[in-house]
Length: 307
Image (cartoon, rainbow, N blue to C red; front, side, top):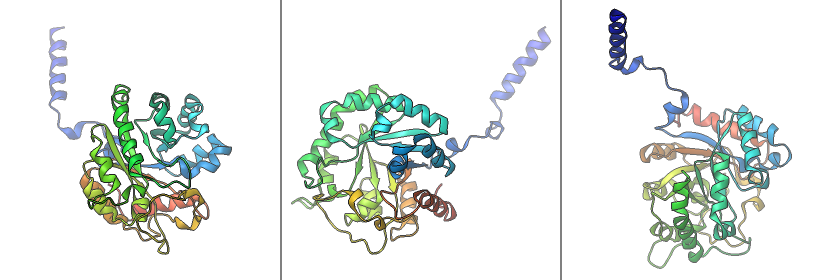
């Protein structure tokens, strides 16, 4: 018995001092964790999801997508437990939840946080500031969004959630002190409480250089929305009045690599500043949206943009 015990002890010591290469190979998600992950925003597939949730989720999975970002559609948040089971059945995980209805954040963030938890998300946040299409976005409402998120921070932290804010471009209106509404937003938040999701398309649409934007807010930018813009789409400062992306021409969006946005530089900057999530999205598309997402994925991989 003594010899057996000594043998067990020796084996245990050997295993504890084994070199790192003797450990089991990490799975793909662990390997990519330091360089970010790819995901898809379900908004891209909203019309199909309205008609057939299981079938649409299966088609998303077949694209090679493992993670999705949700939004506050009735077929998602109306029965969060059911939708999570449908995600599980498709082999997908919702890592984040946009909540677009600003009045819901004003009334009761608790419901939003609870719903995000039920869906299995790690992030939830504000993704839209307009209540009507006609209204412009004001500095007051931009600052209000920051204050809402900061007030909800303790509750989100207690629930194990990270709050975030998705920029749509109207926040980049200038102020009189050579700054922007978004600079004011950032001055109202603590990055420990609120992370930033830079929509590269809308930052570009607002006349900003997205790489410079990422650098300026490098301590907060943790997620990116990626999609491309044709050469004929005009860019410049806008205040959000009469602005609603679903009403814009479908030709305004093209797959990554088919437009004028320099994604090579964006992915390089993303690696430098530690972006964790690169989220494929098509607000609209004149054609097969699944083929568009597949084209974006192929471009990213063929050009070796992704870590």
